Length: 288
Length: 126
Image 1: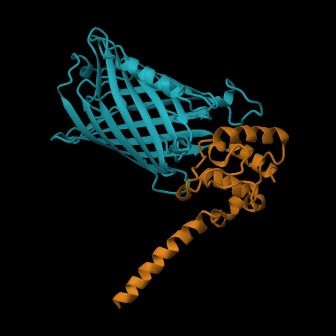
Image 2: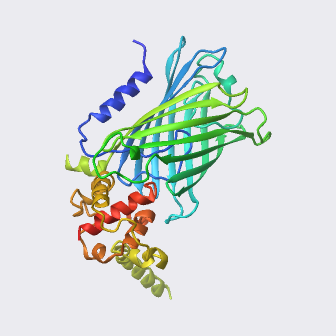
Image 3: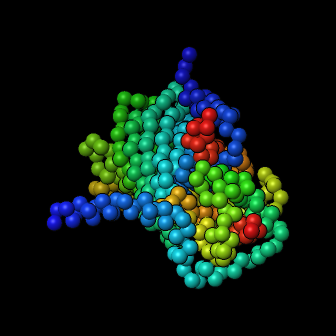
């Protein structure tokens, strides 16, 4: 029986939703690629899936997926594990590796611009199509080859996250530096995001589809070349509107159609995600 | 000389838990800038704002502070003298900045009017 990563992800996510944690849950990340300075609340575990579908010209369409486990270690420290996989039509469905990520807030108060330091270790292979970020000369051409898991990529990734909340708007800027731990040059990228809830004031009555639960925004992200050829030459860039719905005491749903801005980019990417937060998971496990 | 250094280290180690306890015991109030302390709530004691604040409290705060805001798992009881005597501006400042070292996250991701609604609810508890 063929291993279906997407199916396993779906089952895990559904299992998490139904696994007997009846207390309120909510999810909070505004974007798919860009990070804001919002950290996971200490003791909470967020389970999320993020999927990107692409339809490259001259290659098979694909669906890259990650299962994300995000835990709030401290109010200023969030840790995450990602399990990556992908399915390419007419080829195969494969597990492509894992990522470990840590984010730290060095400043303990809210400022106009709030920095967060991000460190990630990736152990993925050449078939990975999750597109959690775009760096270096990443582009459509990388997706023209058939799935090949023989190329191992052990990479370290650093991000400087800058983020501001102002009058209901969130504006976030990420500067990305990534290094394959083998002798390959540093690669760079960027991500920018802006978002706002549809209503800044909460209604007094319980509601699921009221305006305060919807958030809209946009992301702009792409590569900036590498150490030897820094700049926009031979890089890919995307502009992606985003909409999300957070159901109070329930899951959150996000969707984002992305449009390639140059010939190196995929023409169209469709991202969607579901997330659910389990409050104070360690306390609950202790009580059980 | 060496004994003196050891004594200083011991004193420092002994005082750490007390300093941390002091920090977790409402020391944030003294850090609130004067201009924030004096901010007035746009909702005051508007019953609709209190109801919305109660809803937001259940969604965002109850997992740590309990459904009745009475505290939970060593997290503070909000029916306390400290909250009673805090000005709306001070509570708004705490929600915005959190007290990250003591485990209270920043709620700046909630729009400012929603934070004021939570403050209206907290003040209604008294």
